[in-house]
Length: 312
Image 1 (spheres, one colour):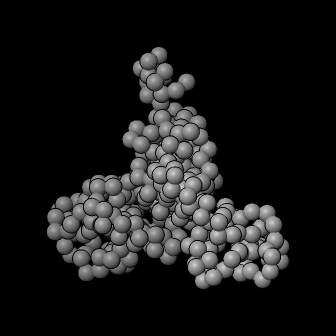
Image 2 (cartoon, rainbow, N blue to C red; image 1 turned 90 degrees about the horizontal axis):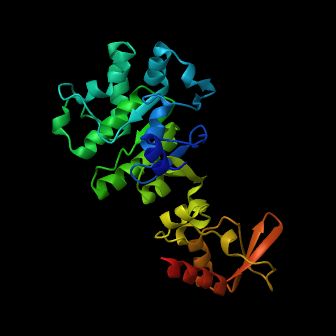
């Protein structure tokens, strides 16, 4: 039954149902949806901040539901870091002490905590701010402190629940860029929650779109836009231009070039193809190794652009 029927019949709200997915090591996996879709609920099941009524949760092959209280605390302290929308920094502790708090819980030596806090603050662009207090920092800087706090304990997994949604657009964009750069460097496995489609498209290696507690589609960003699996997903992405996600494989047609033509791979993005035609090419050969997969003419590209403009 759907969410409305469950509420009418039983007075209960479906938080998450039929929402199975796996996340690859080192991947940024976005879970997105409108308010009330279940995305924050699902991420809080991973470290059992919310106890599921049914189902299974496995972290690196370990059944989280089987953990006792002590093992669960250890999982949260050492294996999984969490970054919330609101940082909840200790106002009476310095920035460095806030960042090192997880290591303090782990009973790490003081010098080790200081070194880890300094290193984490440097990673997020706050070197030299460790002696300050939270009320001396802007909202964007406090958000960085929250990320540094999660990184300082060196967890394998980051759970990020709308970490940038309360920030101004420019600061938000800067932090997104910094996190993506940092993610490539530290290679953390990340579950990233957002209600913003543009943010999900930018941040995620893959995206799961939720509606009423259920996952409608899980796929790479370009497939979410170009090949929506349901009417709901199609409506969700209808305002996004498909042009930036189009590659040669989306435009090519069967056939061979009449003569010598510039050769490109099937994943070549649209701007590169446009530049080739701008440089004087009349047609392009799309090849995979020695095999010709198809051809692209200027008219094919123009038709695809017109199609995109008509849908936005």
